[in-house]
Image (cartoon, rainbow, N blue to C red):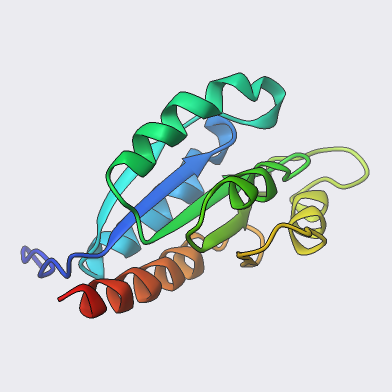
Length: 147
């Protein structure tokens, strides 16, 4: 308690499709920081308004990131879109904000698992801790190789 984690040099980007996805993204960010990584977060840039993604994604990538976590509920499409645009590992974090037939994150999870975009790994619904840990392990490994 009261101690900051030593910085490893790992750089992680976190993107949320909507504002309802932010709590799980924040959970992932806490884990990333505790594991020594720097975190940049961009919120509310989902596929319902895809034009909102381009400028923030460029900004995020201008400071090289080693991995990106993308949190999305509803259709869960954003992680596949991001994975198709970047050349770093993407961790899909399905959230339970969806409703209807594929509600409670089921459609988001299945959409991410079914992707054909290369470089997308997926954690279980609302597993911000797992997404953060995976991203930090990747980022810390990359940072170690940079030294």
